[in-house]
Image (cartoon, rainbow, N blue to C red; front, side, top):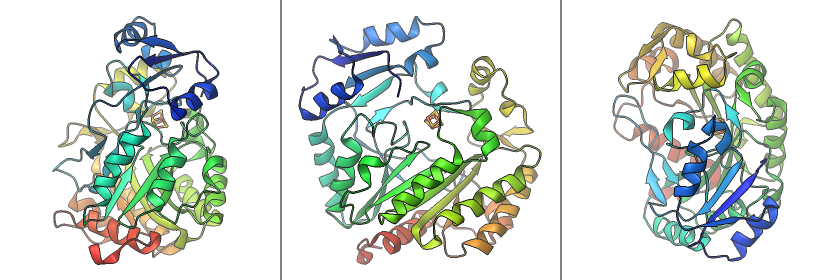
Amino acid sequence: MKLNRVFIDAAVDRDEEVEYLITKTGITPEVVQNSQPVYDLINGSDDPIAFAKHLLYITENRGAVIRECPGTSHYTCCDYTILHTGTFCTMDCSYCILQAYFHPPVLQYFAGLNRLSGALDKVFAKKKILRIGTGEYTDSLIWEPISTMPAFLVEKFAGQDRAVLELKTKTVNVDSLLNLEHNGKTILAWSVNTPEIIRSEERGTAALAARLSAAKRCAEKGYKLAFHFDPLVLYEGCEQAYERVILSIFDHVAPTEVAWISIGTFRFMPQLKPIVEKRFPGSTIPYGEFILGLDNKMRYFKPLRIALYKRLAKVFRETAPDVLVYYCMEDREIWEKTFGYFPGKDGELGHLLDQSAAKRCGLNTSLL
Ligand code: SF4
């Protein structure tokens, strides 16, 4: 995290969590009464997206701390729950949806571990298995070097048996988590891609080998893992390159240590294209054979998606037949033609993931 300026909302309580964060940034925060001066500063810069990656705004989350993942009815959804701990990211992937999602983009840290804790206690009291992640609107572990929040969450989840926490990242920031009493209730998850795509499209992220070494270190400490092949990008030779990534994962960790793996080809809101063209002029990522999907996102032409998925499904079957591999947002035809089945009923994919979480992480199976 390379910050130039830090702003703090005057309403934020300067407790231990916040003082630790400020100390770690090494920057004296500028106090603001509301977010407007921060928005104005970002909007006034030449490249607001790049500018916002170096400006931290410490504030409170005034909205819902826990939210349902905004899936769509047109594609099979995994019934995920989002823990809203911050927004935006310090890394810079060309395809990052967050570039087009926030107006303006702001790197916000939502202070208030007590509020988080209270919201989680309510969730843990439900007679329901939940998969909860912080990696929807930010990278879960960019915060680890400056904040106690990731460690706090790991220890909070360790004290119950109804929910798993998934921390999703493209970093290798796991040091403060390794020796925690996690009780198996945290899944450390890496988004993975081929070394070519990481080099060309994922600026500032850790190399694939480093991500897999970090995953191995976590597995050695008893953490369960997940991997997300998202986005799969089509380019010449990509089939073999993605196959090598799968093999490389299982050279580092055993299939029994993996709770799930998701796969999904590149898809994007049409408004992302001009942003990529402007900010990443060397990127070819938005120029494939795309069609507009039912969710108003551009997706690769279906036969191209099926061809790649079939190759990868075969490798997963051969290397890790017991690991749950699923599609993020694909339809019945894709599932049936590549995996030979479709989790058709409403909530069925979510149920399969809950079962895997229960099995790998020791959740209360009477709630399944
Ligand atoms: S790591 Fe994730 S959140 Fe960060 S820029 Fe890349 S895609 Fe966006």
